[in-house]
Image (cartoon, rainbow, N blue to C red; front, side, top):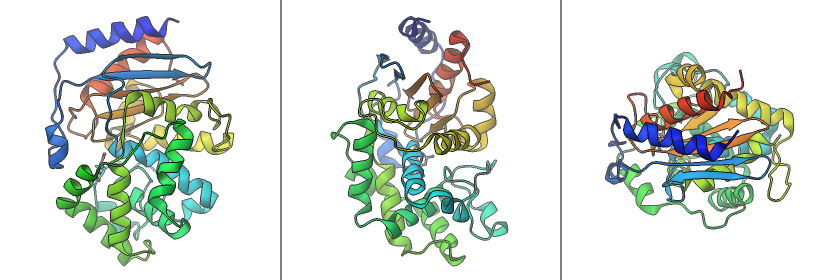
Length: 304
Ligand code: GLN
């Protein structure tokens, strides 16, 4: 299959269609992004790369980072991770509070904000310098030291982070946050602000398509059973209350963020990152979803 030809053809087709949706206006700094940006990068397990559009431009990866923070916590805590955060799709919005009362402060999964906050708490309890160690980890999986947090995005999100502040305090009231909510929120906003290009994101997530082993350095990040589990959670929870729709249309495990980025994994074949900043009503990239749907149709390759 000629990946380059297929991505270019699909890219041109999606580009010619309407660019619906809106920017993540609730974070002021994200509302300034050029909504016409559109990039794609595929990295394959046989060490090839294919890309088009704005694939080397950095953007705010936002909730895509929740895959990497989960993996860090999972490496530290193993199966104990699941004592404090579940693995069930929530069927609710990424920033929803509603299930937490019935579930006594245990978030449904690590990819909604509540779950990611608990994961940040685990990192704080178990690491000396979680921010630096987080960057080191991203550096290891992507084999790239040019990846940083954005102070502008952190400050912008802190100014309007009332919902996340409420979530963190609410979980704390059930005893499922060990550290101070301020410290947990600071780490959460910081990791969400990380800026990466499609090229960097696709390379950084390639180990998830390669049984947990990085291609560049052959480092085993997760064992193959743990890798399957992370992919399973991406499949069932990666797109909040649109996770079923993404499975239905794209047929790959994936994760989105309100910066308009999406990563998707085809186990044993490739990892792909797509970026287009306009979001649909569920907070997932409008063009990103379209592109991936058409791509897996063209490639006739989904995991099903
Ligand atoms: N930082 C964003 C928030 O907490 C992340 C949300 C997302 O990308 N879905 O609101």
